[in-house]
Length: 137
Image (cartoon, rainbow, N blue to C red; front, side, top):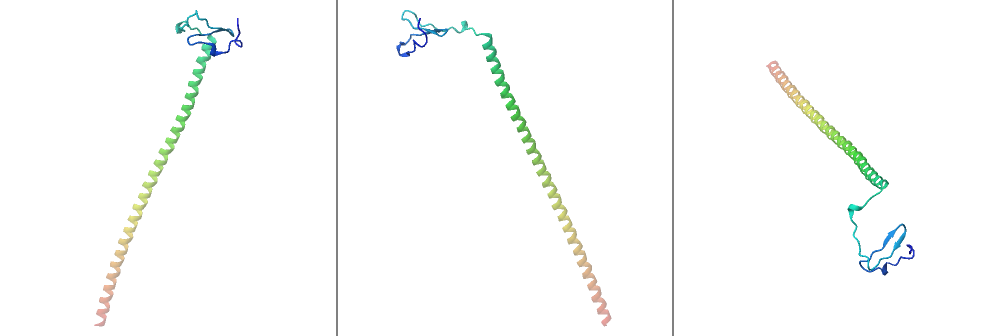
């Protein structure tokens, strides 16, 4: 029976022919043997292969979950920082508005004080003029 090295010419195969490989030896196709279809219900897998496949899938899913959970944590941290920055900016704007309102109130009070001082000053000047006018007579 020929081995794999002796049977390597795929151009010798005709369409529809198939070669059978078992334990490293290749059986060449025969014209009298029909091509057989593989029935999936008759496939068997060794337990070790099943364990390797299942553990590979579980490891992949676990790695994906760890990566996305770290990403979710980072996104939560970023959102929290953005919210705090927004709240801080809002508080800063409120404080600035209060300071502006206080300064406007102080400026209005200063204007009223000056107006009162001017009325006082005008009243004193009027009294002095009346006194000088009485003294001249």
